[in-house]
Image (tube, rainbow, N blue to C red; front, top):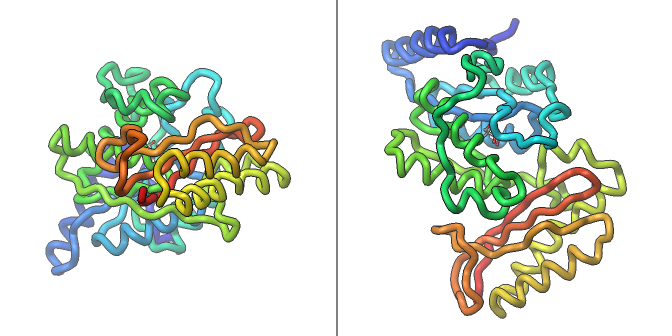
Length: 290
Ligand code: PAF
């Protein structure tokens, strides 16, 4: 018998979540709510977020919504994988009680929200430069989900490092009373970061895509010699793979997400984005610049 409830409307979600919270409070259970926002096409990386959510609170809500606002013209909104039946089976196996899976009309009753959250200057860099408007659309839907679910905490993946940074900054700047928890990237044994878009890759592309993490690892090893050495070590590994077309490689300060100067020493994050065939992949690791 199914224990996972699929809630398609905000009204249903409020009813069922309210009841679950009341029941937990009455029985001395944990009535904190933790949200895991997703666009579905779940893989082991998402399940790591779900497990972290279970560790953080009593009632876990997973949202599944492919948010049109964060896809630009010509991006993969139409072909973005939609695997609802498999997603629900995976969430049921993780003992998820509530899946919020609204349609676009429920989330954007007037077509699209006129009010948007702006991601500011950092939102126009790196992924934001390649995908104009992406982060405004992402923050807008995350703000809506936080407003709808009113979770005590929400869990995001470090694989989308710029997204995690911008979400954290949004809740700080807008005084949203939700703690943001960021979970380490889950990788294949080859090092390739798990991503819903990996399923677009054929065998040769899949094997070439491993150059991204190989490049980041080479950079981490060379980081004792400073930013220039780390960048060139990564670039050499990635450029050696002809199927991988590098978009950007940058070392950012973890607190500002701005590129570090050439004489910077200390903790940092290296970000990479590349195209493999028509598939855009991103990854990042933390590095320590000597
Ligand atoms: O990371 C994602 O899957 C999406 O950007 C998110 C956070 C669910 C917002 O649509």
